[in-house]
Image 1 (cartoon, rainbow, N blue to C red):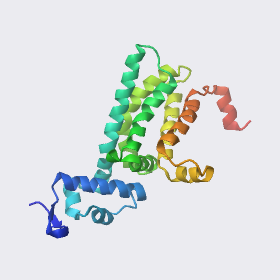
Image 2: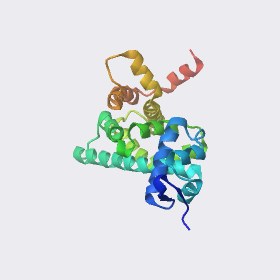
Image 3: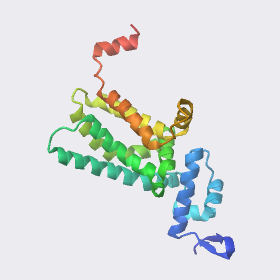
Amino acid sequence: MAASRPARKGVAIDATSADTKTRILDAAESLFMEHGFEATSLRSLTTAAGVNLAAVNYHFGTKEVLFQAVLTRRLDPMNQERIKLLKGVEREAQGRALSCEKVLFAMLIPALKIARDEKRGGKNFLRLLGRAYADPAPFIRHFLSGQYAEMIGLYKEAFLKALPHLSRQELTWRLHFVMGALSYTLAGTDAVKLFAQMTAVEKYDDELLLQRLAPFLVAGLKAPALADSRKLELVSGD
């Protein structure tokens, strides 16, 4: 028997309906973005969604599964769009290596599109993704690693062609730093404060933020590979 709870004006909410599932996901996305995974309670979630615990259990079972579902519904389409965009510019290049900038922009453009589209989560989802990327919970790290695997694998090959001076190991580290910088920036709070401190003219905008971030990321990716001797100097402090 489907669980339900009284709704306003005496209308019962069907806990098994697709609409109820969407409401739970929307409420969870907002709360996880604002408070993080650990600090978001199921009680606050059911209150925000206007459902009971039975509805959450029916659709997701656990808070961990719900968190993954919140990320998956936005992250899967975004990563597929990234893959489609990269394959498109590779076809246009007709076998020639892409520039580092083109590869990076193919990765950033889908994130910009989400930032502009509130129906796909908008800025809130990007900030949630930034939180998730920095979260120490092992299940979140494992989940994100799996969700990004196909996309990162394809982009890594494109970057290796664009940056032949880098070894695969060095590029892996640099892409890790790129994803970390992107996720931290999109998490939002510090960026908003920085914008407020730096200028009273510019309005905070995710597109402008990513436009400023892109040259920084390109410079980091293009930086010369450190020679072994130089690495030793850095470690020893000489």
